[in-house]
Image 1 (cartoon, rainbow, N blue to C red):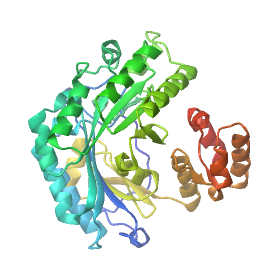
Image 2: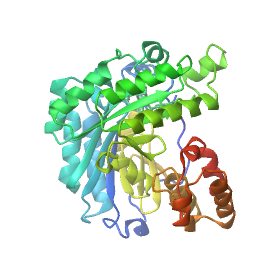
Image 3: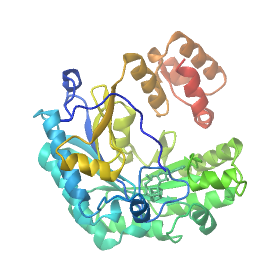
Image 4: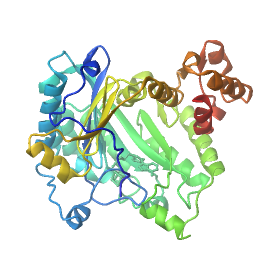
Length: 409
Ligand SMILES: C[S@@+](CC[C@H](N)C(=O)[O-])C[C@H]1O[C@@H](n2cnc3c(N)ncnc32)[C@H](O)[C@@H]1O
Ligand code: SF4
């Protein structure tokens, strides 16, 4: 099952925020995340906060998908009350999951309309939904586009049947590529494909074939993630039983190099360790908002929000979430005010993974010493270092987690 939420302090029942969090609201970029916690089936590797119909039935709860959009609209209205009447046009909206596209397109459009009605969208706002390839068709995509969505992210994962099978993915090879064409036809300006590398049994050639298929489909953004064996998943159980081997770090590093080369040749540049885009306009601005510590409201079960240094999270189960809203209470379950020291560490953790890197001035003396060592080891870019920034080289990206750990000292 999905990982647990932190404890934190309780959120007041009306969801109100401390006055200091509201200071400067509107001067910082503001976005909306909407979580849709339903999937047709659970992929063996995934520990996201999502539920299949069987899982909801077996937990003995009623958490109806039919009324989900109503609950979401109620939380969007609550957000407006909590944030007051500041001019707060939304720069990015991201519907993620789970599988948002398991709901009827009109529900997704209704949630977006509620955000537009309450806050307004900034000119050129980016409006994304995630989608599973088997859950959409041209009519569905056209309805989303007409309703204001302009970016879509498909979970492709792999082009190889045996890899898809091991991951419990139910789309046929070729379907994600067809989705890109259908999304373009429907008028989506930006299309992403998610890929996973390092699945047990996947060869370098399988991975190259997946990259070729993804690139050939013509998205303007690719996210490539190394397969993480999350505790409590079916995949973790199979690895533990010795049915599947753990993939070692060297294989993951080789696959990363293969990805960076193939994507680079095809005109995709990295802008975050796991993300490549064909231009600056094709970057995912919603994720950039997270990575740069902006403000966002996360609506839906288990969703996290961040406004002015206060972070809070909603009740995780869809039934508990729905009940709170039905009783006129915030679904917010816990919150924390981030101390300045934690915010500095978080900035380093996130910004160091970006192509712009993080300012050396953010590092403590021990972190700066580590940065000098990383520079000598070829993990940081010398020209950027000279200009006062820590930017990972290709080798640095392969060892990003370790470099980040050293620099936050
Ligand atoms: C929340 S999922 C939503 C996308 C959509 N439900 C789908 O699967 O097509 C976002 C992405 O996270 C990635 N992901 C999820 N679990 C992962 C894991 N354990 N290791 C690596 N990537 C993972 C997958 O690439 C997936 O497409
Ligand atoms: S479809 Fe997506 S969100 Fe649902 S279980 Fe699979 S990877 Fe997770």
